[in-house]
Image (cartoon, rainbow, N blue to C red; front, side, top):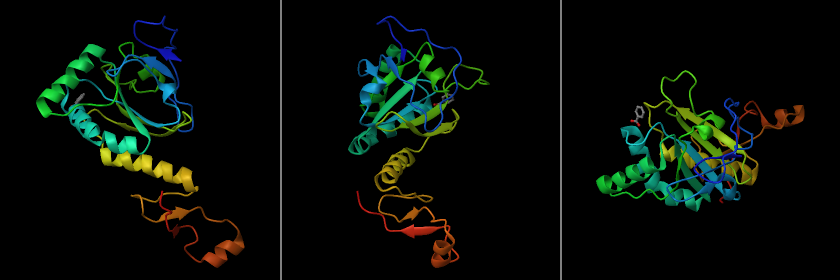
Length: 221
Ligand code: BEZ
């Protein structure tokens, strides 16, 4: 487990670690955040969207934080907690969130993790090895209630992420888990889902030419 901040005594952190993949346990960490100390594994039982941003006080990141703050209640209603992270210090995070409130009237209600040692960013592969600066990429890690990474997205510093797509991602993962189905392109709650094809000759013959893409009604949550 990664520990950051002044206390308790930090554990040694591997300098090189493999980037986690979908299906891996999310690397655990304890760190200081804008909402007090946080240990990731304490959020078990809830979905977590852990997202990194390149730097505080930058325009694209600010636009993302405003949109995420406004959508926070929607994530909470999905039993999903937002957790932000960058390599900036806690005082920097606090000053930035205060400036967002003062300038845009938006309070950021989710914790933002400080990672000045870059230990967490390294463990998640949020640092681009070829990048000229130590800023993290725009990484998103969707972590399920058992602490397993279920989806990841990486965007460059220049392109802001879509909050509606992040909401849709959590809804789709939850639908998949609930009913053992698959969600097609652009799926939204209430849309038809797709069912895994039954791979027997009889089933394929009975289903017809489009046996490899069969839609079915979505059962409401
Ligand atoms: C931004 O959030 O606007 C940004 C952050 C890092 C590099 C470039 C842009």
